[in-house]
Image (cartoon, rainbow, N blue to C red):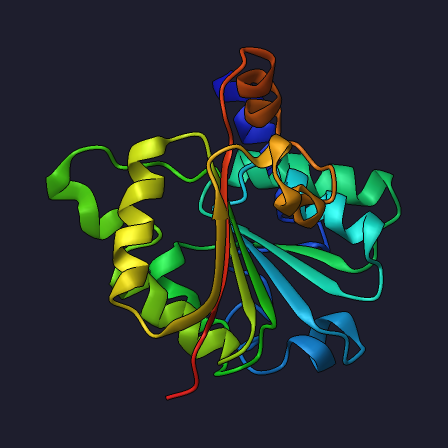
Length: 220
């Protein structure tokens, strides 16, 4: 496995659709995604902690009029997403290797238009609450890079994380909050575009409910 990772890391250095430290535009992409990478002005959608990028690549096929950036810190996972994007011929997809708390180093205010958070680590221990991707410190980052009136989506199998997020959003300036504890038996199912991550499929096969919510930030 370690050897396979090393091979993938080496291949990542040569992939045009994977940005990581050491690549020419990695340090200068902020504020210039449209001009330096996508070469168009289509809206940019982010998948945070994307893992293998199943949502990134799936959305790119279904809505080719948008650009997609899958973000994760794990290079071997991003390798998989980059390979899939290449195999499906998606030119509107790129993967970015960084930590989520550093997003503002890569996106200017309002540069992105939508965010997906798909099955993030729930960080179950209370002392790790600040590391949950729906903690207020992360929400403030998201609000800056997508601006007001733009959608944020969360999908998770973890009830505690979902309830925590709902409580956080009660105190946060958001609007148009809609949610369900059972996505596949809800009117909101149309928003997930039929895309399932491998973990999500596993949960669904075991009869486990999938929680989903969406909201927009208020202009302040």
